[in-house]
Length: 145
Image (cartoon, rainbow, N blue to C red; front, top):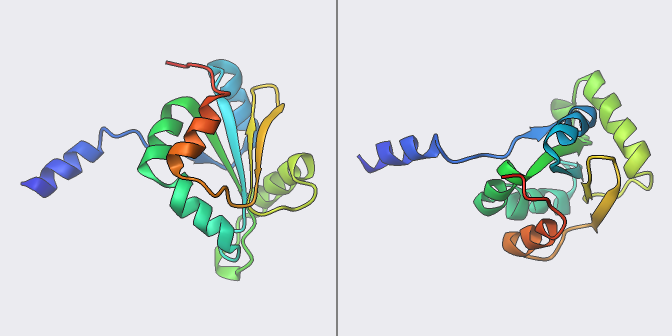
């Protein structure tokens, strides 16, 4: 019975969705006035990237906040053959990196407004809790509820 309740309850918990298309995110941001959080990651080779994902970006606390306040874009650059992205996604990620991460930093996380202006950046693993990270993001976010 308890398992059934947990499964049922999980259907109503908002989850954050990561997009692969920055243009799609900016179009949505123009309509909703939400900020865009872009995460440049090497998902299968960058230790700090994996840690950031597990310890902050995939936590329930962050996902609950992000699901109603942010648009999320992950620009992933995996190295292992089994994790390679399709050619179109690679092109989108490379174009985004050319614009916002020319130095090739990993992890590199940006908070961007609907006009493409960088409001805040995190270079490397932000050594903080999910709550502290959300607090920093929320200083820039508009109330979209």
